[in-house]
Every structure is written in C-alpha cells, then in structure tokens.
Amino acid sequence: MHESHKLKLSETEKQALTEKESAKQHEHRDPLTGTPGAHPVGTGLGAAGAGAAGAAIGAAAGPVGALAGAALGAVVGGLIGKGVAEGIDPTEESALWRESYKLRPYYDQGFTYESDYEPAYKYGWETRKKYPDRKFDEVEPELQENWDKSKAESRLDWEDAQHPVRDAWQRIESRRKNKD
Image (tube, rainbow, N blue to C red; front, top):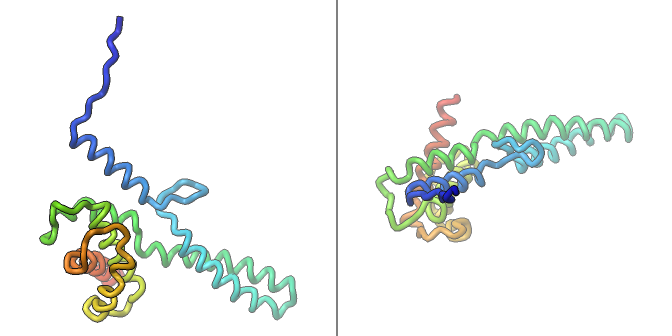
C-alpha cells in the first residue's frame, strides 16, 4: 500500500513560485504566437498612422491606389511602431527592478514590489518615453502632480515614489545615451 506524499514547500519556495507567476503575467505575450515582448499598442499606433498616410498618398492613383497605399502603410507603420515600443521592454524592466529593488537605499520592507514599487518603476519608464528630450528634474513637478492618478494600488506617496520613478527614468535615459 502506497502512502500519498504531499509536496511541502517552504515559505521561500512558495514566495518564489508566486513571484515567478507574477513575472509571467507581465511578459506582454503576443496574443497570436504567445511569444513574450509583444507591443500591441505601439504596433497599432504605427499601423494606424502609416496606414492613413499610405491611403492619402495612394489616393492620387484612385480608389485602388488608396487601398494599396493604406495596406502597405499599415504593415510598414506597424513594424515601425513595434520597434519604437520595443525601445523600452516592460518585461525586462520589471524583471530587473524585481531583482534589485531591495538593494536600493530607499527600500522599505513595509512595501512590496508588486503592489508598491512596481507601479513607481513603471511610471518612471513610461513617463521617460513621454518626455524623451527632457531631464527628470525638469518634469518632476508634473510627475508629482500626476502620481496619484497613475499609481494604481501603490501605497507610496510621492516622497517615497520619486526615488524608484527617478531610478527607472535614469536607467532608460542612460540606455538611450549608450545607443547613440
């Protein structure tokens, strides 16, 4: 007679599994292929803009030209939009900060990554895209003003959130400088 063995996990192992599941949810998987790193918004915006431009250019050749121009423009624009959106990989950024946030001088063990710090890091990398030619200090007053609307469930007030926001902002800024 075999005795049923139940797998017992330590708290650390349970936490690791929970964090792995959480990370999986933030991989931005492509809805068709399932591959991580999809950027449907960037792709869609690029496709829409270039599709409209292609239709306008093709209109000179009549209705068929407008349709062909729109189709070609949408494909090219979608690829360009995906490339722009991929300049910042949310999956990569989230994984990096998840691994290192506890090492930062502002870390407070009363806050968690998923609920508190991740929204701040995300706000930093997303707003960096919005202001590509400006310094953090120039836009900080506006970032502070909009933090309460953007922070989701984070319990961080601006005094605590500004540090991870700045970290994520500056990481993107330094990566862009290194590409030039």
